[in-house]
Length: 108
Image 1 (cartoon, rainbow, N blue to C red):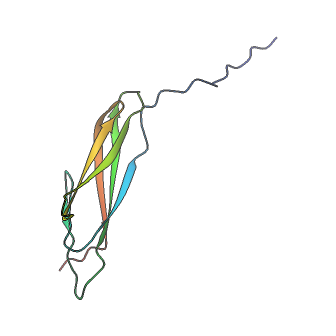
Image 2 (cartoon, one colour):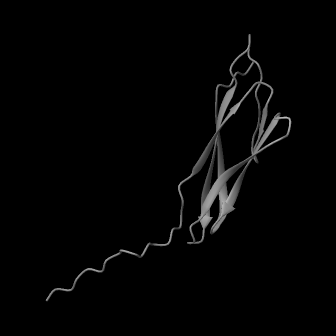
Image 3 (cartoon, rainbow, N blue to C red):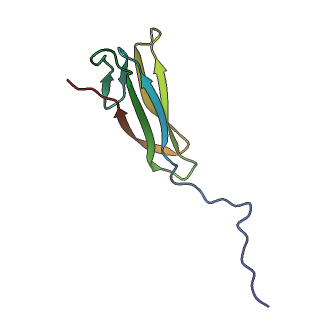
C-alpha cells in the first residue's frame, strides 16, 4: 500500500513577507507632501496646471513570521495645506522601506 501525501488543507505556512502597499495622493497647487525622506511642494506651472500625482509605497523588509505588514498612513493638516505620509508597521514587521514616485512635476 502506498503512503498518501499529507494534505496542506487547514495549515497555512507562516508568512515572512507581505506585498508592498501603495497609496496614491493627488496634490493641488499650493499643497505640500511630507514623508520621512522627501518634501514635495505642488506649484502652479505657467498658466495654471493640474497638480502632481504622487504614489507612496511601503514595504516590509525585515520581519518575524507573524503576518508582517507595513502600510502608508496619511495625515492631513486641518487647513489641507500639508499632507504627511508615514509607514505604519504591524504584525511582525521590524523595518519598513518607503518609496515615493512622483509624476506631473514641472521644474523651472
